[in-house]
Image (tube, rainbow, N blue to C red; front, top):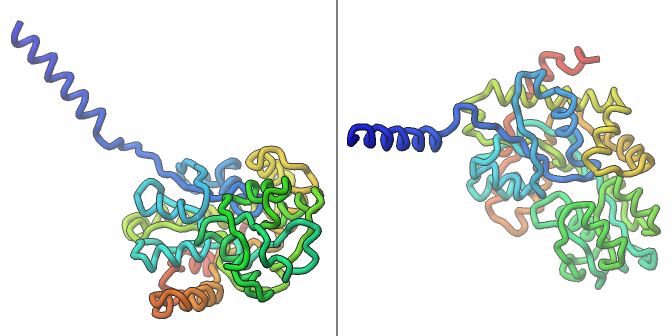
Length: 327
């Protein structure tokens, strides 16, 4: 009886050890960081139309609101890959984070300042309330840059942190805030709701590292083949977007919870023009962001744009003619 009891206890303990051991089938997560029509569509497509699987990748796609949070989760080891924007990557790297940009989707700022139609000029933004995103996001950077371009100090507006594009737009459309910063699809929504486009940042033609994919240097060292396949899959997803309009709009509609066709058409046209075919990051955009951040952070003055990227995989895309072979 005693031996039988010991056998049962041993079996239970073994079961607990096995249950608590790391799974050999541990999932690898890739995060998209915005539900905006302009920020994450390439991740959505790569997952939904099977491009990740085509490249031998078993990635679980999850949503984390904001590139700062995405990179924090990446550094913590909760993710394999994350979407991001240049300023968030720079801030993380300067703070000691083991991260690198491995591919890009957009290399400019596709943003607009929209707001109450009673705001007649950019200068009248002074003293008004703004729906903003958390510091380090592209929306935050874009708003600060836009204000600087028109001579309005950030401290002279009433900034209220609201979150992602849809939430910021809703706060402005309902009159809770006077203005906000949005991308193309949201601008169309704003104008339909009676808001006014106050600043078109595309006119500034600012090189900027907007949507990009990030992983850790550790992962690049330990699993370069997987990272390579992720980069190639993202390039193919960009090609799919540009050559399969209807399928792409259908996926956009799913992830944006049924936005109207006219809004998605406008977002599709803007994305198709701005998406970078081979996924090559903008070193010039990173350099200019570093110059701006160096005004308040001495660490940025000592950094180089090349410190924040791993270009071997996009270099391979260029040298192999991968994108051309997709046509």
